[in-house]
Length: 106
Image (cartoon, rainbow, N blue to C red; front, side, top):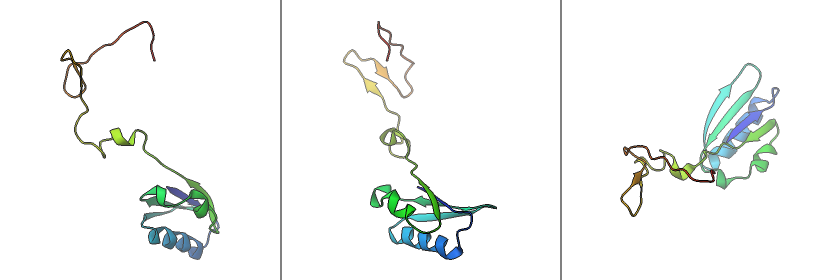
């Protein structure tokens, strides 16, 4: 989750958001820019509603960052996925590429 603070957010407002997120188990990485401060909240995003974070004074915007295809990612599963068909053909991993064709493409 990315929390973008208003350009004129005070140190107290930034620290209030930071403390609240840390109390919910998030690791916070602060990035103080020339114009505004951005907080990266690393943790289980299911524990908190983005609207509750956006309601803090000094918060401009809250963006959820979710990894697409999380269950297929290398973070979740390090080994290659290989699908083997009944005829012995394997797709994936170190196997030779397989081309599938038909009258309809998806």
